[in-house]
Length: 223
Image 1: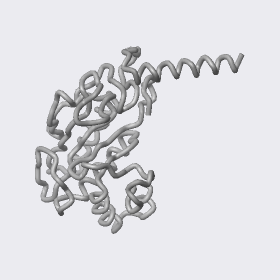
Image 2: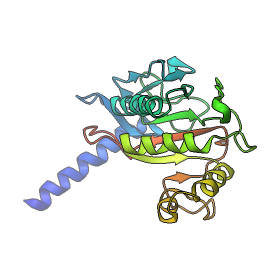
Image 3: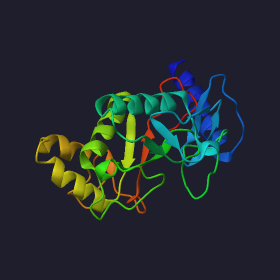
Image 4: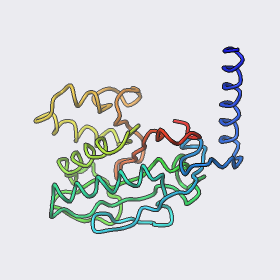
């Protein structure tokens, strides 16, 4: 009997996976992320609004799971509390209202990804994404934001250019433990090393890409 139940469960899980990958609209009963970030969609997506703490560059592509949106808002509120005079957080794409492909990204399909600008030195507000490999990066603020996201969300990956990782790591090691940094950063290991939450990805010298794990109650979500 147990073997039979396990076989049925395995068949059901396989069917759900194939449905998500093929684009079949098996609508779950609950709001949330369906399928994978690079081959999925979004049910009942929540729009991230611009506010006193957040500037959303393209609101029509700023939909995510409730878990993701709430964690971004919480981190932004804490950034303003910790740095009362700070410029607003600048956010790029999350997902389309119903998810699915969103150019030019390979992911951003199921409401668990978002792009966010790095914080610039001198409290400079930049309404867009700017290369931070040439001395413009505010390491302290960017690190504070990363730690707040790790606190408020179950972060799976933070994609960050290798050279930006190096700038962050070499300054942070002056006051953070080596153990903590090596646990989170892929640097100083080689870019291809699959270690750490913060990993290299091409074209991420001007923004971070942050992905959260599937929320526990998103039954159709695949990490």
